[in-house]
Length: 121
Image (cartoon, rainbow, N blue to C red; front, side, top):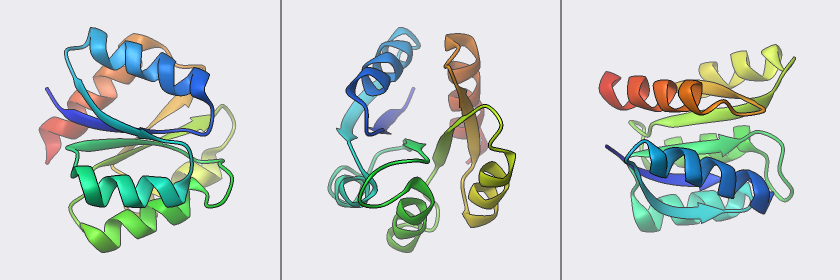
């Protein structure tokens, strides 16, 4: 199981993801509410995996992904997107994301994606 950093600007989404991940036996390393915080928390916590919302204030998820990849090229980041954001997903994968999950979250799909990304690297 992995140590995970949850990045989302809404407390509700962070709590929802936290509960899903806890139920799968994962540890929550920490949380961040925007991209700038995500980079700082990644540097500080060195988690096994990051779940990263795409749309956030201050710095979006794609720019935060770039910042994290500069710190750690091997970083494992799963992007969280809304339905219908295929272009954003393609850009995120090209930028270095290892996977993605779609809102509204379905626990089995979230846990499966996390398991696959943790196992792959």
